[in-house]
Length: 93
Image (cartoon, rainbow, N blue to C red; front, side, top):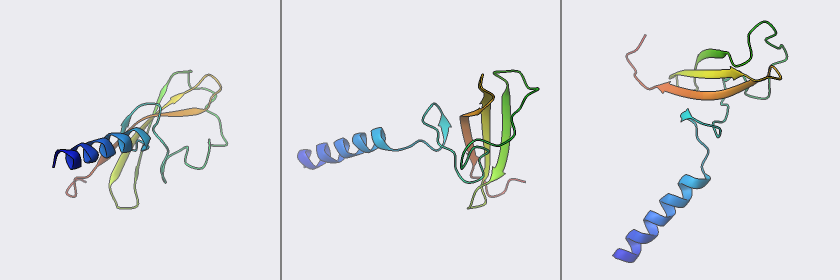
């Protein structure tokens, strides 16, 4: 029994190290369909916004959940995805 429990715990720990993060904060956050940077950086650059500005973005995912993302403008005027929150509440407006 203890060997099986240890094996399961090790598998969970290893899978957490290799999985990509889809919700939360951090450098490993990957764009998803509906994200501004999904499929690459946008063609237009934000030339008037100060470097380091936060850009909020919201959309609905493929399951109809509202997704809130925050981007930061890099010095080269590209956007960096910094946070994502998914609202799973089915009764929200």
